[in-house]
Image (tube, rainbow, N blue to C red; front, side, top):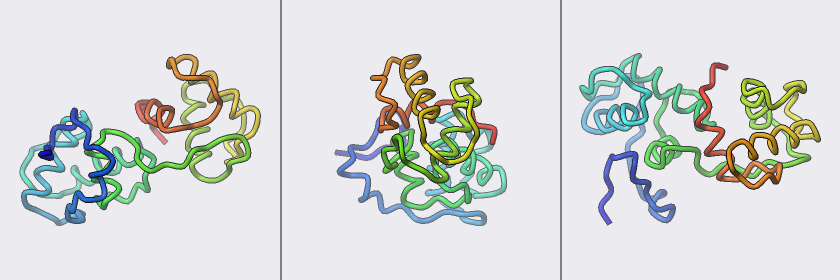
Length: 164
């Protein structure tokens, strides 16, 4: 199977760890940066010139993409960021459910607040109110209303514009 930079074609999960792409950051340049810029353009995130130069506009776009797919927003394109770019969505995220806690729960609560599904405090505690908000989101997006954030729910959540 040939790998392409067309973000419309996702790479099978078994191939994801074998991408062997270089780490890219501010100051990087070359064909890999050009590929990055094309992937970000295909996702409607990068609108700059595709020139193979990783400058501030490219870094800003990478951070925006990382926020969208729930990765640390450091502007560095590492293995996980490459995988997410090729799949066009979040990768390797844990299942969240009642009793879960932490930063990812806070991110979900903020996102669901922006959609008016969540009315509670952003506290990082996945309780009954968060579960109900997730179920509401799932119903509106034709997903099974389990109240559990699984891979399909992560993917739909990643489509919400995030201005955090």
